[in-house]
Amino acid sequence: MDEVDILFDREAVTRKVKELGQIINADYQGRDLLVVGILKGAFIFMADLVREIDLPLQLDFMDVSSYGDSTVSSGEVRIIKDLEYSIKDKDVLIVEDIVDTGLTLKYIKEILHRRGPGSIRICCLLDKPSRRKADIFPEYVGYSIPDRFVVGYGLDYAEQYRHYPAVCELKPSVYQK
Ligand code: 5GP
Image (cartoon, rainbow, N blue to C red; front, side, top):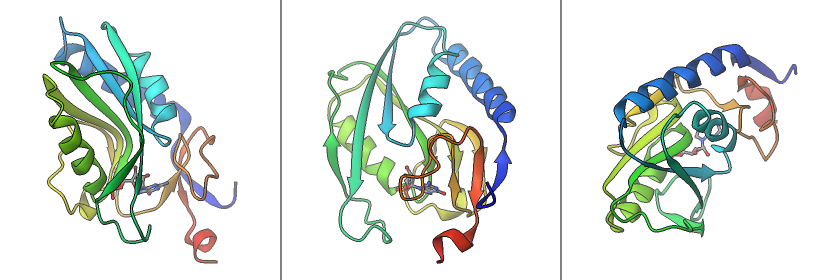
């Protein structure tokens, strides 16, 4: 574990996810939800979050990848796995691990809007507002963080660290090797 520094430990994250669940419960009272998880990063957050939501809900998943050079986000994404269900007239809650430039979610939101949902909102565990390039304002945010590279609780670096229970900062020495 000397490659990472813990930012939010498991207990803190659990409390935060509970809080988000309570707010979502209150906001969507009397409605059904379609919760859309963006793979792979959101899988742990989504699994914990939906268990705090006390409303009728369906789950679906989308997997996307950026086109071209992965170090320069173009915002244009390729759908690797699309939703299984129609979202027409549904209240869609997109669950994402982290919003950085916002370009990915802007693109996803545009695609989903064209399918005629009742509403679309975004819930992310982490937000890096200082990096934003697109006009994306998630309605539900766990933690706003500075411009640091984080791993754990679903988030990876080269597919590693997703299973760490805490949200951690990856030491730059790891990726600057
Ligand atoms: P955006 O289009 O908002 O720039 O990109 C969002 C995606 O970039 C996230 O879903 C995530 O996959 C990746 N990302 C952005 N910042 C981080 C980070 O600090 N750590 C990890 N592991 N992924 C990140």
